[in-house]
Length: 519
Image 1 (cartoon, rainbow, N blue to C red):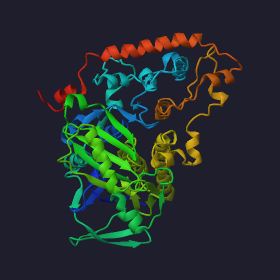
Image 2: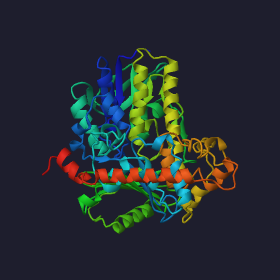
Image 3: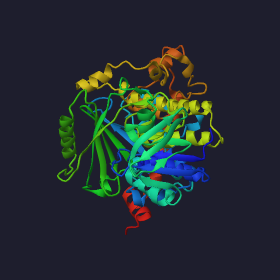
Image 4: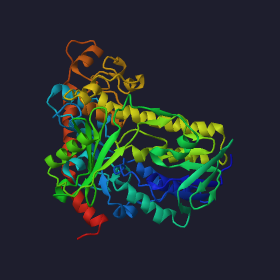
């Protein structure tokens, strides 16, 4: 299958990220984007993760070029509240790489927790991730001299932005003049043995192509609607399927503009809060199996009022989504990118992440020159493996919860998960993960820099305890003397990071001066 002509059906963030990728990486190909003038894009992707920087680098975009146009603010972490239990408090999943002290592994903190049981769980990430000094102090420090460890500003920061405006910026600044942009409805679709033969638009144009990319959102007009590809639901693992979303005004920009997305677990789901430059994006994610849309809106409004927000002029948008992925994502000459392929749920900011990851997979196939069935199946396999990883990671936030204060949270406590989720964490009785403090001290029991360690520790799932150390080392009483010395070094390093950033500008001050050019 030779691909010289490519048609993207659907605009929005997915459509124009797709067009941008193709324009930048395959300028010799003819790209057409067909965008309905009547469909409003879904603006749930206002929070990104650091991996977006890989895509930005690949297509040659500097983040400061689009931030001002997209109401953007830097993001350094994701903060979770009350996921373990009601009123259990907060923990973070910071971006960047952890710094292991003297090659002794991440287990050192767990010894600190054993010796000092009242140590807050968020001390775990503060002890290993230099970026947490910035999060905790609400400071911006670019680390050009390397004094803040391996934290790399251009690699490790992410963004809160208006995803709709981001798509528009890509359209006007990258794609304009390089693609054939048609605003029209697809009236009918003709198929043949090769897949889609042509699209008839309501303006009378007949569109043909070698490859059709479906960016039509949950409608999945081409992959599901035309190619009749089966959709595989995952609502047995992730129950949420609704969200109410809005924007609220700042009361105090300096105080409320934080560099983390805030995910707050409440009665029937969780609320996201993402600080943008001009306003705060927020939404309530829930399941209609446990609460009606009307009552969820009431609950959401009550939440915002308790947080001190004025909601008199807020416009609330109801978003219905389906959790799952299609069985195949590349069928004949049709490939899906974005919501038309599949969706997890908004937790962990995975929506835009799957877009650029799937685009990367597609680009490596197109780079080969011609496409065969193996390439198509490899695309499906790569995307579905990526999707499965996201599902398991997001499900972990619910699986480890001990909340039982509402039917929603009781159902999470009693849910039986697919086997794969149980492989994410090392078992506490697996002695292969444990090594003696008197030898190498600690092994790395979690994947290096993995968010799994941050989430599980934040949810009080601790793979090392006094019992496991005694059991693993055949002793009735474990010798912690060497661990105590190393813990002291670890605490000194954490305090040094805090002191290093103390005099740096706040996030608001930095954004105001460096991005928005305001005095």
